[in-house]
Length: 598
Image 1 (cartoon, helix red, strand yellow):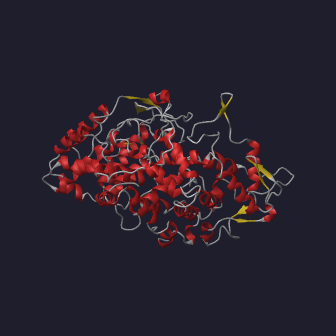
Image 2 (cartoon, rainbow, N blue to C red):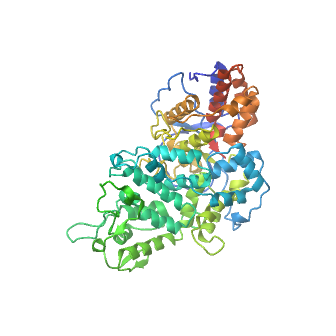
Image 3 (cartoon, one colour):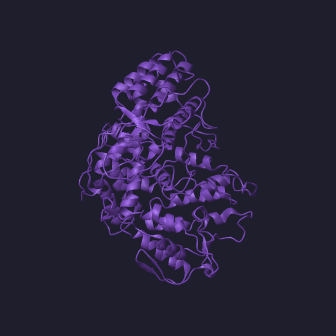
């Protein structure tokens, strides 16, 4: 039996009941293993997430051996026929509180009462315009420099200070849409701290995070070149130092050439505009072969960091694009995807190669589908993918790859806005980082300045996920992941975030959240005063918490059950009032109706 240290027996019983019944409104559960992969077909979306049990008292509950975690039964809907209706043409009335909170959780990290009021006042499109125009907050580079992490003594530090800066940005920056896009891009154009050993690696990742932020609302082509020439990507995928063939066995490194096609731009197979796979003779048509990789790798030779002393006392080269050495470039024409790369110099060859990739017809559906998955739903219909791909191909003014237009198409699509929050054929499992940042913003987590929240990769005691600490270039999960041995398998429902879900991560997540609400994380502490002010009326307090977290997705029945359990905690002292607030948050965070973002 699990129990919170500050709860009543009724709260513990309510948590168990919520788990058993699917949160008062969920469907039946069926088993799903925490790993595996399958192709990504169209149609359907995941259903409710399994309800985690609250953690033990008073110490964190031990993490069990990972067994298959229960996966909810999906109710997939047939994919609608591709539509030509542009998302930008959708005219919506002003949102109510629940609709505003739901949109803010998709387009950012969280909804405060002030955020909800602003969105209701100005409307969806005007809110997006405000976010696109919002100034950037202090850069990761400047934050780390100001706090002493760019000092020479720190050049070999193992990413000390990087999580601090990332959490500070995600939890406090008012430009939520930009920060949410940074997280999404970091999971597509992956550079990971894992395994990095070069000097100034902390500043390298800080510069990369700033680069993603700088290009978050720009052009896809500009983003692609900035990523390709960043010291972080050059080091991670070994384009840095790649040299021409020497006739004695040395060949250009092919790592970046392969991944820039497979993961960043066109994928493995030819796609229709709606993301469906093109076939010939019943087999998918591949986008490239080994010779394409070899030819493209030649076009990427000759690049290195812009310094003669990478181990010196000045890390500023990590902020500059890599520079080219002509003597290391593989000359001669290269043929990539049927196009000749004929430039005689390395910088021109790289630009020609990136032009070929960025203009490939796969990019719109391939990249657009992943953005839909990161912001709105795990298994978008072909019609949804096609509308976003159309926005990628042409923003309405003849411009290709306008990321503002793509984001607007993702967030304003009829399938994003008009599906009711409780519908079973929409949504996605909230990844652990999103759950943490959302509740951190909701409880106004604040720090004296250092934000000493650690990186959170440990699945037993933390979240099993931490920004910029992906286990590989393939991110924390694959976009085409289908949970095996479940009804989602038979329905072919892609649910990438379920790849992180198992009994260990469920326990670690709840222990982490319990600590957050009780003592804070690191030097960051929660402010529960708004909840305490409502604690005498448990139903009102829980309703407020459910609105901010679920945006209308948490049923009245579930809220009533949670409120009844919370009421068993006496509220005639400050301790009682704050424990009511904690219990309300924890039961909602454990609730399947919350964990699935609709």
